[in-house]
Length: 381
Image 1 (cartoon, rainbow, N blue to C red):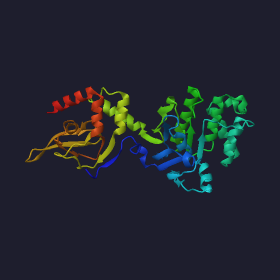
Image 2: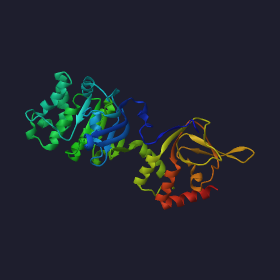
Image 3: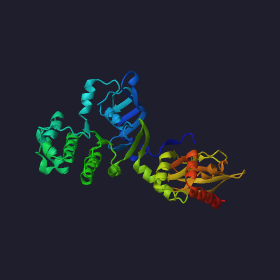
Image 4: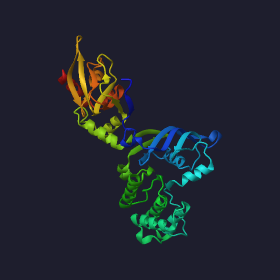
């Protein structure tokens, strides 16, 4: 048991891309505004890792610290306490030269588009290309391509006073993307856009992440674009309250819905259960649970298979084999009796596991869950 690997099931660390380098790494990050008696803490001991090519959406109520964290990652504020690494560079105590170099690798897209009124859409975007040192011919092709892609082909040479608010926002998006940044930081990038334009923007983000390995962190209240996220990070009162890998959560929910025990739970409750689950890994022949031990975990088999062994006092005999999609360990959690069997991995196996207290909270959530569970236990006798 001690040699099992345990990691959060929905944290993103179990995703296929867990071997990819970290674009952003936050550890123990605090931040304060003001001085003396007016000093107020805005971020509290936050930890977050974002890997290359991930699209991370940050949600939470206004004033929860999302934009503060985003601007710290973007080097627009100084790190005060804790560790913040961007593209492998520690920002705590960093010098001006490092900040200047890093900003060339970042793309910023904020609600306030801040376009130069005297310049055309093309010229506004070209300023960013010039600062990045892009060859003018290459820049011109890329600017025209981006503005056309964003529905501004007929307005490339219009100045901001002749553009709508949504069109100005799309120019600002092109400006943030023209130099092919390694990390894009976007604060409400689709807030001023209609559904069609907003979808085009996030589709473009997906292509950058997939084709160029660009990492994207977005702050948004736009529920229309949540489907593009690899992970959703929720902030409340300066704390990261949850960090959920969307695909892994979906997989877990599909597993859970396949069992009568979980069938009546609402999607919200299923997602909450998935968020509490961890991943255990066990090697071939490894003991997962031992007969006679106290029960503390409920197991779903994600990959692999296990043997169910019972010791009758004279010898141990195999009474069942469980495979991917099946579960075990629930009896001891509901009866408070010791484990009634030993479970060993037949091969290298991966499990989703739920702790005893969380398991019991699910029982309290759904009376039908407890009824189904007791029926399942009865049928196993």
